[in-house]
Image (cartoon, rainbow, N blue to C red):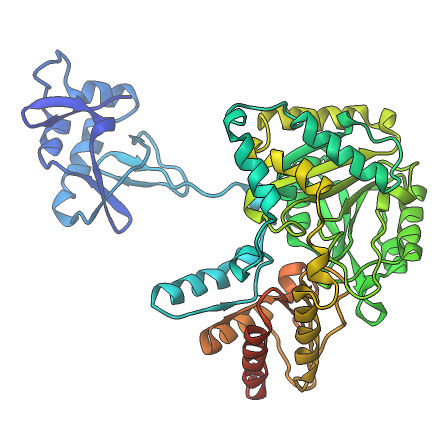
Length: 504
């Protein structure tokens, strides 16, 4: 419906009017509208405004009654909102001057979806920065702000291809980039992967959500590690599934507890997520652990999702084994990308490789195709980085082998955390994180989100609470090992000083 309201002696459609908010109510920017709603007729129309108002269910008494309230409200700031006449009121809506102000709520599908790495505590950190405080951030695995630069050959290749990267690509991605990914997995002895089995995405994050949405029906269960990268849990919930968390054993190098996995498999279980190397613990799984997990997947006909984004960031004698190489008989989706190993997180360049008996999954693959087509394609300029990255000099080795910066920072982080009374940390063997434990006998913490917020407010230091990674107890937190050693020493020193007198 269109209400015509007077403005400077002429009539204009209602949708052009500026509305103002005062508390929970609204009013128009022109007081003459109230008279117009009651009795007026626009000079260029034959029918009064109330004719249109009544056609949509409004009444003269309703409009006149609401007009009488006008002097009680004072306008403060302009807003834009959808308004309809007031034939009836619905729960959650508010009415003023014969107009319903619709109250919009988030979808129920988001009820169990959260991503606390960028949650409420980060908002407090941003507020402190706006007030002029310098926040030392150990909360997110973003290499660039810590001085890690992308290899020059990757940047040069992207720049050189920009003139031909202005249009869409195939929905699965550029042929050259997909071929490079295919060859990468052939080198890892993954059988039966062709170019058509490779999907490029705007980072692994987009592809995780796509792969879950294409597979899950309401009530389907997916086994996800605890702790996990929380997007996996969120993507399962967003897709209508139920994430079921299997425990990783801190006393056993943070490797998955096979007995716990076995106990949590039900007739509704549809898939298993493996994060190796693990975020947030830094664990790198042995061949025996992977074979045990895959045998459970085999026995229960589960799809395997293997997140291997940190496969090149390994320390000491750690060896990464591609999950799919151990299970040619299982449907396996392997996720990887350029963000971490090649330090181009902002490029949002990731991929899926589908291996195993694809003839048994044609409907599922068709679902992935549909979602890939709907988003048109991944970022085309950054796709040009993939072939150069995978086929070129692997500069990540300069950072993880002695005397590499990442290795040195991992070592110092681990040493400093274990020097804090009441804090213990399993040595990370991969990735960019440490996941220390706070002994509840030394420093009992009931709410770990409150702990990291208190740490932020007191020490201007930002970390992430363990429960944000779906760890069931409030006794862990995650730090990134990306800052330089002097910054790590300063930051972890602040944590130690803070814990000395901290109690909840």
